[in-house]
Length: 522
Image 1: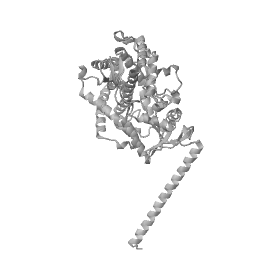
Image 2: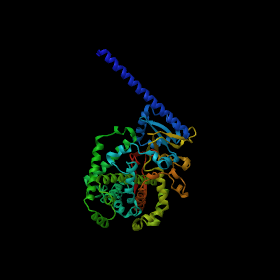
Image 3: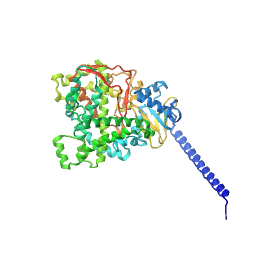
Image 4: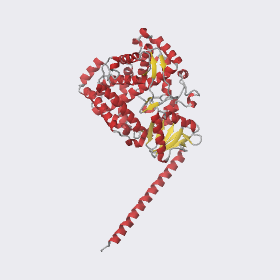
């Protein structure tokens, strides 16, 4: 049988239209079934929609622009807190970001559900892709079995006997003191020094050797240029990770050459220490521990000989251990310098326990003795309330599920969370809401902790549930020690801050002061 060209063309066209029609019909049927299943789920659980953010624009592109603008200005957290006031004090609302539904909530019950009681309904989403170039497969980037294995590997490293070794901090604090003295009571940026201090302390704890980033010619100490390059690359790479995180599913849009260059520098530096540890036999590792004391890397090398596991976990812990403590110290001195009554009361307690000036009893400052400093504990609690180290966090639903509260006009109904929905929660917002902390929630007031308020999930500076921070006691101990020693050596603390109120915050993975910490100390 012969067919002319027109017949063949008509035959193909007819079949193409038929297949296209079938595909469209199948898509419509699939969408209809999905919508029916969603409606049945919503009715079954009594869900109602949370307040919908009205100014996001198509696919949430306007909202994405707004968020990036406020983030770059250091105002994104207070912008979010302002929305709470603007839209009828609603602490749960829905928005779209690059077409992805995002449910934002400051309700403690919702955070408890996502982080604990419904833990298995949520994952880190695309965080692994955001962080992988720098942090690889570590405790902060992995989900499921990978995360469980990481936590099991790392948990023993934060045992009480390790975090109690505060004496290793003293040499670094002495170098910090040299920098403070060189300014002779004039104004300087203390936050910049805190970040150098914590990278020095972190690298000694993690690698067994400090990078001594506080060393420079201004205090007559020689600095290693390669070390300075590592610290700078580490900082810049983390800023890039922060940008990628806030872009969420569109993270791939931010991939500048500088990010990869900095990542390469960081990895080269970490590999050097990892290879040094792996060159030792198990017997040599044990001998080194006896002679040099505890080192995170060498203890980890007793558990695994995989160089990638060692490198990735080291960098994961360094991000947490270094930046969170530097931010905590910076915000603490920011508020202490502005509140002389608090500073004087804190000094009085410190001097009573450990002396001051030339009469300082440094040998008495231990993990146990610092726990007896009640007012110091209140100060740190209040700093972490107002300035939690990780002010915003995210989870992604891996199945259709719900939030217990936040839906409907009164905000008391469950909220539908479809598979793939991003849940964003902000300890910064929650910990400044007056219904949890009273009318003075925006005030720095350590005395509020005197009554030991039962806040539950309304106070979440170290996250909660199975992924609660392993190193929280380590960070608190380090920060406490530095505060005690600086109060002993420099009793006069004056704020020279002249910026906006509230202060602007720089956020990448953690939070610090965008405009630095201008003070005078003597």
